[in-house]
Amino acid sequence: MTQSRRYPSSTDVARLAGVSQSAVSRTFSEGKSVSEDTRKKVLKAAKQLGYSPNFIPRILLKNRSYFVAVVISGTSNSFYALAFEEFTKALQKTGHQVLLIHTDSDHSLDGVLPRLASYRVDAIVSALPVLSEEAAQSLAQINIPAISFNTPVKNRWVASVCAESAGGAAVIADLFVERGAKSFGYIAGSAGSHASNERLRGYQARLRRHGFSQVQKIDGDYHYDGGYEAVLSFSRIGPIPDAIFCGNDLMALGAMDALRHELGLSVPSDVLVAGFDNVPEASWKSYSLTTIVQDYPQMVADAMELLQFMMTSGNSAGGILRTVPCKLIERNSTAR
Picture 1 (cartoon, one colour):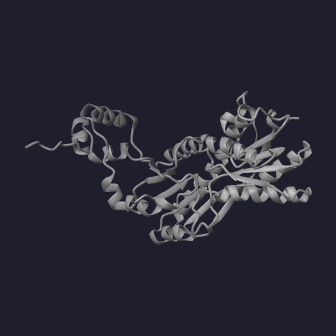
Picture 2 (tube, rainbow, N blue to C red):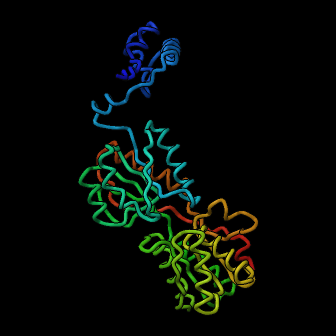
Picture 3 (cartoon, helix red, strand yellow):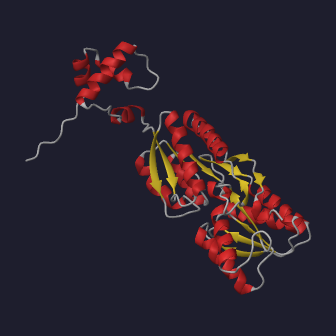
C-alpha cells in the first residue's frame, strides 16, 4: 500500500527556524509585520523543507477563497489576450489568485456562470459581457460580484465597464464621408453581441445624419476568417462598398487581405477600411489599419476599482457604471 505524502507544516518550519508558529504565519501573510531577521530564518527553513502555506484553513475561517475567476474565450484576438494579462497583474497586486475559466463563446460569459458557483470564487472578471437577465439573476442568487466589459443588463451584482462603442463608430462614419465614400458596409461580430450591435447603431445613425440610409451588413463572427469571407460575400451581392467598417480589428485585417489578394483591390484607393480595438497588429506596416482605440488598461483599472468596492462593501454596484471614451487613430487604410 502506497503511503500518502506528508506535507511539511508551519510547525515544522517554526521548529527548524527556531521561531514561533505565529511568526511563520505572519511571514506568509500579506501585510503582517515580522522582523527581517525572522523573515530570513523562516524563508530559509521553508525552502529547506519544501514548505508552501496552506490556504484552506483561511478559506474556511473567513469564508473567502481569495480566488477571482477570470473568464476568457481564447487568445486569438489580441484585445482579449491583453485584457487578460492586465486583469491578472492587477488582481495579483491585490493579493488575489487567478482562476482561469474558459468558455467557448466569443461574445458572452453567460454559459459558464452556473459552474462558477461551485468554485467558491470571490468575484468574476471578464472582457466578455453578461448578456441575459437570467445569467445576471443567477449571480445575484449566489452573491458573486461580476465585473465585465460592455454588459447591457442591470443587476446589483453585475457591474460593467463600457467602451463608448456607438460614439467611436460615429467617428468612423464621419471619417468615411469626409474621405469621399458614397456606399458603406459593416462587418459585424457574433450574433447577439452587444458591442457589435452598439457599433452598428452608432455607425448607421451618423451616416443617416450625412444623408446615407443604406448600410450593407454581413456577420464576421469577430474572427479573421470571418472578415475575409464577409468581403467575398459583399462581392457576390454586388459592387463592393466604398468603405467597410469592421466590428473589431481582427475582422478588418481579414477584410483587407481579401480585398487585396482575392479581389485585386487597393486599400485605401479603392476601398476604405477601419476597425475597432487598436490591437498591436493594426499598426503593422502591411496593414496600417485605421481604428478606434478601446482603452483596455483604463477599462481594467475601472473594473478593479468597482471590484474592490463590491467585495469589501457588499453593496450594490448599480448595473452599468463606467463608460471609457474611445479615440480615433487614423492610419493608411483610410488615408486618401
